[in-house]
Amino acid sequence: MATTIAEGRIAHAQLFVGAEGTGALPLALAYATLVNCENPSAEDSCGICNSCNKINKLIHSDLHFTFPTVGKDVVSSDLMEEWRESVSENPYMGYRDWVLKIGAEGKQGNINTKETADIFRRLSLKALEGKFKIQIIWGVEYLKEQGNKLLKILEEPPEGTLFILVCEDPNQVLPTILSRAQVVQIPPIDYNSLTNALIAEGMDEPVAKQTASLSSGSWLMALSLSQNSSNDLFTYLKDFLNLSLFDSKVPERIRLIDSLSQWGREPLKLFLNYLIDMLHKAEHISFQTNLAKTAFPEENAFLEKFAKMLTPYKAELIFKKANDAIMQIERNGNAKLVLFNLSLSVRNVLAN
Ligand SMILES: [Zn+2]
Image (cartoon, rainbow, N blue to C red; front, side, top):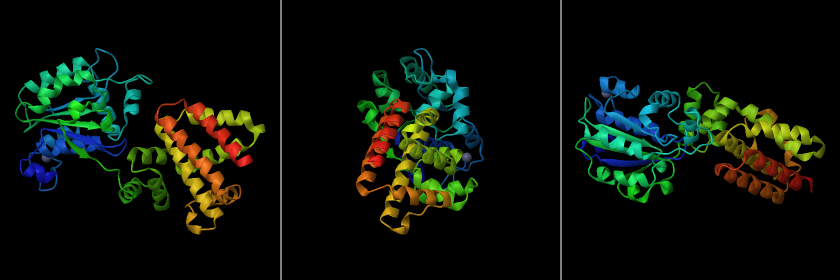
């Protein structure tokens, strides 16, 4: 990236594509910092000049943000305070976190016509202090037909103007926008970097390794796992499986599912991925391959017992049900219903 800039070959519209939690927004910010840095090295921005400082605080007058808002007349500039707060708390945030932050839970975000007019107005002004005027559009999936009004300015932006579009899912981006941007694919964060970052946050190495392996390359997942702590997750999992098995425990099962369903989409997906991971390990134990051990003695003791109830066929059935549950959660299915169905399937598979 630094080379592109040094050689002056900057594409004026780029689309950063990265799954939730993989860091497309932090990368967009790093890019904006680098191109406007007053004293960049061959590899990176200096991090200390006036421009770096202001971009770091999200107060640079040539750095503009557009993001989904809720309401026909609400534009991004109305929510800059909330935006700065959210991004400095967690630049890896997902769309759902953002909508929660602006108090519009359950509503659909939008980049509206008023905002596209604002983009025009802002970009027609001369750059005030930076080398480049930069417009970041985070959640460009939310730009629907009104996005067609931006095609001309995307194709031929005023001199010294850069667009950085950020999305999770390019299939949801307006094709006319997609075709006008240079796509930069952000890969999931690799296992070693995630492990090291977690260790740097003060996590013990074995726990960090386990957390990283469960996080599918997402820092957001890793964070929410470290906050719930792996041991809590284990307690929930143990209860979920135990309570699913006994019809006499229905009231307790309902209470547990009630509490799990409050977790929100990402932590729930994490829980279900953890269930799948533990099933795999239990399956290995039942085949007596010993590569299945985890870092926690209580988990291993539980897995030993659990393995005795599994056959490969039964494990396969539960994998399938747990994967279905993840898909339904991703499509915003009713969490309580999804967990209850999964619990019933676990019971039917294991009790027969
Ligand atoms: Zn700098």
